[in-house]
Length: 624
Image (cartoon, rainbow, N blue to C red; front, side, top):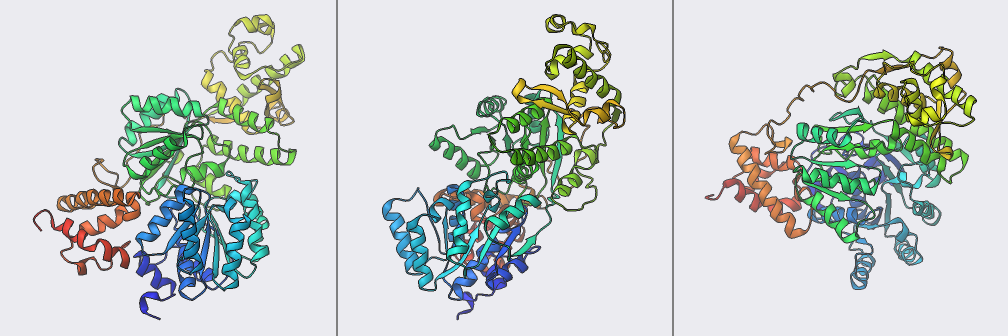
């Protein structure tokens, strides 16, 4: 076998992808799967999951095992990953609804001839009789090498992106038991992992769990006041001109906020499932292919987004659980450079999430699990200690304080809210006893603050012993107390009774003063942040180019302009051609010949052949 077709994983890593060494557990995973073992891989976004199945697929194809099938949930992701593999010299293809009949037939012919190394397909297509017949034919010829199931958390009802069509993937083990399978996800707690193993029948698979830590991401959670103004200040102060994602709960909110940001001079686009499919695709393509776009979106946007230079992810509404929060914030800083995860949340977020769970048609067991997941997210939001320690602890990982989150950088001032909590709970108790019904948070706060509203007068709640007992407390303080009481289970939001507040079994201990309530004084306006090491003073260059001198920055800018032209010609995001880190390494070397490009990280054999001469020409300058 020629050296360039060696099935050795390290050789493939260098020859095809242009890297000299594996990261973290990549080598152990790749060697295990290449040898024919099943695997469950949990690796954070940006950790190099794709190589964990792409290299075994190439190695097994070179060893004569045939094609690997990659299960991918999104058409856009298939397109970009196949494009990236083509750029690296790997024969890859996809079968999805974007292909014409003739194009799909051509893929099937190439598949039958053994001309494809990796074939991407959605789970709903893979389980059709026609596709299974294709797989049967490959198996009969000994040409079915591997199944890779990406975004494997979608198989679990406990996961944040449950997709019922993933359940049909049990057919892979039942119908093709001798073909190795690798399931990969960036986010799964213990319950979701157990469900993945059971649903995909991976009981005998090797389990590879990487650290969930993303040390380059700085986590901050603020108290929601005027959230639009808060978001604008955050973007303008920290991320002017940067690419980012802003998540909202509703489609209406997405469109309103995108328009507001655009009106403030921010290059913002809306994205949600209600938009015309063509417009939605245009917006996603612009986000991937242009610099400095801020996507304002519902959670319909994001799975499989590989853009490496997203500098921030903001939530203006609270997600449903920590897995969703972690998955969404993990889309920031995939390039390893500093990034921010910023969230604003308030009492209404807690009420809304609790209501959605209660109004769900799901069974009691499912609701109980979802409430537990919401409680864990509330605990993270209310935490006065290290956010990262809390976040990693949820996934069963021990950590020490990071020194980089909002609580570590600026330890919050705390106050004892126990007496205030008792007054609020007493008010809820007495009005239920007096009127036989519950009331919402706003009315409860009016009573304890001594506000004689029409509603207070109507129900004679100004005669309660607790009326005006918290006259000195601000509404923000009272909302914080109620938030924590709901978060700890000492209060319940009754969605069936117009979101009224009800006492629970957990209320008694607080009323008796047995459980203290300690809260932060305010999380709405954190003190000025200390600058990160290596943070850019200007936005002209990528973080990857921070160490370049003036001449190097000039070459870097020229290389980026050249890369943008190539990306447009190939209809691919620029980072698929070369990552910024690769361009920065080239700019630093100032190559004068092809030999000078040997060993640049991210520059494999095919890319050196395709682009080496142009890269040298660009670096030499207009007169080179």
